[in-house]
Amino acid sequence: MRTKSQRLVLNPKAMGDHHRSLLLRYLRLNGPTSRANLARSLGLAPSVVSRLARELLAEGCLVERECIKTSVGRKPTLLAFNPNYRTVIGAHIQTDKLECALLNLGGYVLARWESIIEREPMPEQVLELLFKAVNALRQENTLGIGVAISGLIDAKTGKIVFSPVLQWEGINIREVLEKGCTLPVYVENDANALAAAELLHGAGRNYKDFLCVMISDGLGCGVVLGGRLYRGTLGGAGELGHTTIDLGDDAPICRCGEQGCLEEFCSKRALNREAQRLGLKDWRVLGEMARMGDPYAQKAFLRFGYYLGVGLKNAVNLLNPEAVIIGGDLTEFADLFLNTVKEVVRKHCFPGGRTAPEIMLWQVGKEGFLIGAGGLVVEEFLSSPIRT
Ligand SMILES: [Zn+2]
Image: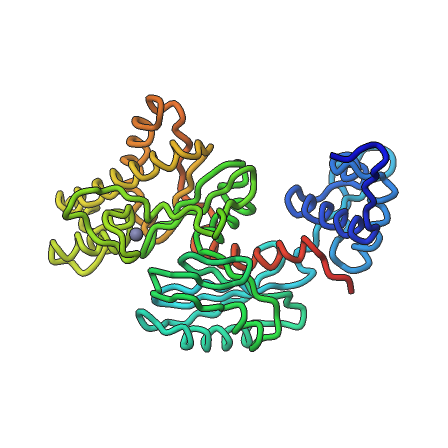
């Protein structure tokens, strides 16, 4: 603790950068605001807000808007974050395709690039495609590249520690891409990227504490606590898909090497197994059969919903979130399992369902991965905005 004789001396440049960052973040989140309201909300002197506004307007980072509601007298002019100030690239590496997009700073997709990739692709092949995509999409004002990928990611170094879905281990995507593209690169777990997109642009806007569960080839989960993404010590927070749900000797073995993981019961992979048992092509055909009234296919989805409900109940008992957002390909058939999930959570959350959160489907949809990936670059820009 500091004594009276010890004063905290702040570096004026660091202080200025901090204020710029505060102001930009506020406007991005809250929309157009008057200078007076900004000063009040941020606890800054009006003179500081005026100076910052002057600088940021001159750079093009902010724009002025006239207030629509006018009364007699002077119209107040509002300040707004300019989403078209720069662009970012967002990429989502999946098992069967690579999706990329050029986005503005508000998460609006300006251009897309997509490529099919082989199953269980080698990292070199995918990085080669990623180079092509970045070269096709980048503009002079592109700030950087954000990459969303499944698995345990060290977001600080950009290294894929291990991705069971892709079977990649120890690949430093950031290092390779930065060398080839000369743009800053940020890498994030795909469920975390989706949670970040929901937090800013989707169903998560209304909540401070929520889980964003992504059901696809596997089952991932982004954890948002206090309005911020929680990654855990090594980036391993939210590995809900690898929590153990079956302790039986004959429990299925997961791709992570453990036995009885939740994603062995709640993923496309799990439903594909059910489909094969019925002689059907895949989970999608199984879903269509269930909708047509096939009792076995319906049962498979009910079982899926039951296991997902139990998995979520465990997560809810641990974190007590306000909401759970469910996203991923499987939401296409939410009508076949969502009510079961809600019922199990409502019934079994401790104590007697009293802590059951709201459960809803994603709002940002598939573009959320690209928006969230591009958002990594925007976040970095807002932390230390460049000066032109
Ligand atoms: Zn597992």
